[in-house]
Image 1 (cartoon, rainbow, N blue to C red):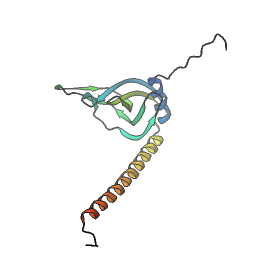
Image 2 (image 1 turned 90 degrees about the vertical axis):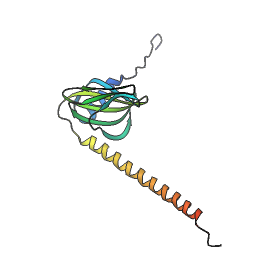
Image 3 (image 1 turned 90 degrees about the horizontal axis):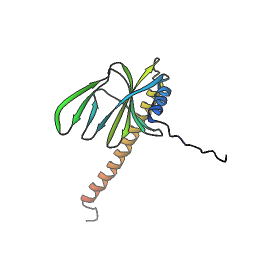
Image 4 (image 1 turned 180 degrees about the horizontal axis):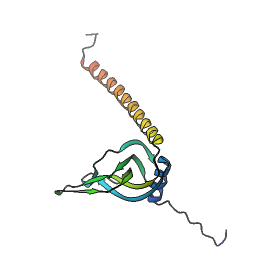
Length: 158
């Protein structure tokens, strides 16, 4: 090994998303572009993205996925009332990913007929996790409410 330098290469986010989409839908995906949506500005999608359980990739965290025909985004700027609509023509895989102070919507073209079983499974897992979380939250609120009621009711000793 003397004289050789090992270079560690981090995967490019575009390649990483192409591989993720290709495996998720069993197609050949190619990265095209992305749109940023922030708290105060950015481009908001005019379509629904299916929320899924967060999937941590090397360079990003996937929060949602959709297959969209002719996806469109509306540009929002807090300092400007003027709105611009951006539209991509064709059928795309859209991946919603975590970004600094917002979300990044990555558009990928694809070849082949997408298989939706794995996406449906991820969506079902997400819904079940949300239901469990809601049930736990409901139990916590009921305990808290019972404690508040007990604290304001006169005690039986009086």
